[in-house]
Length: 405
Ligand SMILES: Nc1ncnc2c1ncn2[C@@H]1O[C@H](COP(=O)(O)OP(=O)(O)OP(=O)(O)O)[C@@H](O)[C@H]1O
Ligand SMILES: [Mg+2]
Image (cartoon, rainbow, N blue to C red; front, top):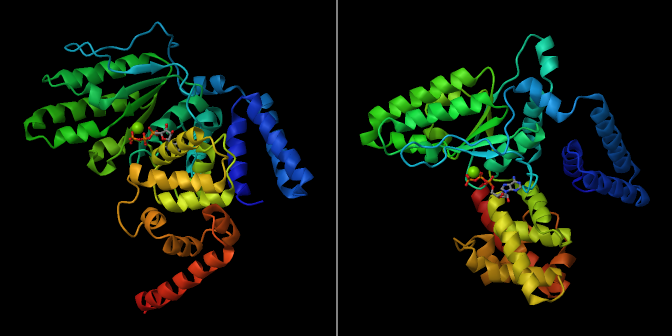
């Protein structure tokens, strides 16, 4: 079965949760694979289902696990975070159930492995201590906007059943001299008292402050306070910081974090998995999803979510059958609205302005798309599609030859 390794990873991650509906769906998938004659894949899911359930019954619950990692008083709905003294704005937000209402993130295989390894350490504190080593307790997540960094921090906390104290650094930066450092100190004192994951989002705010010549004295004080507080927290709390601009971070701050997780724009496979998930409950043909992946190009998860939602809105209002043709027509209407066609050679631009070249490029993109599917979704004959592909190859091959010479 195509992409089974990704499906397997998704099942494994999902089964680590406790939602019985997820388990039921994995069992359904296993049964369908078995009925369809794919015994190897069905047996792999059998192993996952058995492994996870026995692990659940043998190992301590996620709450017990996280108690070994992080100690402190329990946070409750009545506990309020400290506020900025001048503006009375709270310095952080307390989120008791960070998994609630948030989708499970979708990652590339490499990223899944990196996060699984880190979570594995955090969940097996006793094993680490038997080796005389303490678990790492800090992580810096960095990468371009909209790639799921904040979502990941919350997901990590949800995996450990830990509440989150979420501080946006831009909210801590005060225009009053000396107040920013005090805010940071107050925030850490609060976080150190409770069993939680401290999330420091929008770390860039500090870097931006450094660019301001009027702030030189203040930023030194702020960075020092931050370093002291990170050091003091290192042996006890769990801290996740997030930034878009890792290059702007003070090297001393960067070094304080034991794990550095880079979340890049998703690769083609991950974009495919994301669009499939975001288009639900629509059951869209795989070749149609691949075509959409090609049209939007290298975009963030946040962009893809927005794109999928916009598509669903158009389809819902058109009340027509949700066919591949209707989905592509909706995508065509969206291209100018979502400014995807920023240059004339982009796939999105070709899709709107030059169908023949678009089809040629799509069929030569390396994605496993069948000509018959393209003909069906664009409403033209298969011989036309075949001609588009040949014309494209005849046009592009000499150019590629020149480029390669
Ligand atoms: N890897 C992903 N898996 C699933 N959904 C994603 C992913 N990345 C982004 N999204 C979608 O985009 C939304 C925004 O993601 P998020 O806020 O975590 O991005 P971010 O990297 O923190 O962005 P920013 O740098 O702008 O703060 C999510 O709520 C989700 O709907
Ligand atoms: Mg964010």
